[in-house]
Length: 432
Image (cartoon, rainbow, N blue to C red; front, side):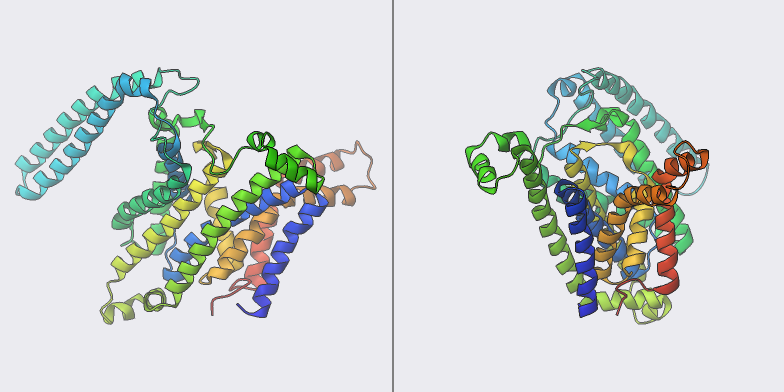
């Protein structure tokens, strides 16, 4: 990094420090933790777009898969639900998969004609009937088991940190399937395909209650750090709070956020080092060559589609890890929260503002944009209050403007994006 780059990072951290002094350190560390996760998300998109020029606007689906990994890894299994229909659901899923694979095999072995068509259609219809015969009663039995509290199969009951790499693997597996289908398409068609498939993934997570509880959410997820109440009951922590002369409850909340910060920062630094080494390696130079001119790269003997698949899976895996972090930090899995505005458009703004093709720029964009995404509503309220102070308190214009402060987020993000594209089209820290 140059001296100017370091100054930009110092300014970004300075904004969070100012928020700590002006508002509270609880707020500042909460912003910092989600800013670190946003930086990781921005890195994932930068791997795809900045390295290879892949226009993926379905990041929300990969983030959702990362959050789902936290559920299946860390939530204890619901034994009553498994007894009610767990085995039957697994058997139905295996039969469905076997039906599809058999249909593909038959289609490839038989000669084109009426016999092949009739055979495949009959096989699919029979397999679907058996699948539904097993699946529907099992799902109904599972969802009827204490629907207010569980109503799903649960997970494996393992440590929650294991869910982070699992989230990356799930997202990479989904990216492999999507890439095999969509990476041969032109960039605009690829964007449409990734958006559509991401919405399908989110819809499945929202409506398959037996698997994720759907819109009823999965709350009370395990944490990799201690609970505030448990800390307050320990002697060493109480003594530490007394020595620092701070209030116990507030200090415990800050301490927990600091623990999260240490873990998230360790993951971010590790990924950043790996991304930097990859970008400066022969592989990274090859990816940039493919990005700039696919025809010339193919003429040099490079398998462009295969390389695109690799980088698409890598970027999606990073997004999956970040999605698992978001769910862990929230403490609950909420499928309805995976909106494209938050988990796709905003991440693209971070990459563009920070500087696509530059890992440090992507990290800086994640921190800066997330800070303004959180703080702009408060700043907008103060700005509108100062601008309308001369008006009557019950003025309809003033009341309308004050009520509109909540919408300052979208306006500010659009304005920031326009200003950066006009004056710094390559981002704050451009690719070198």
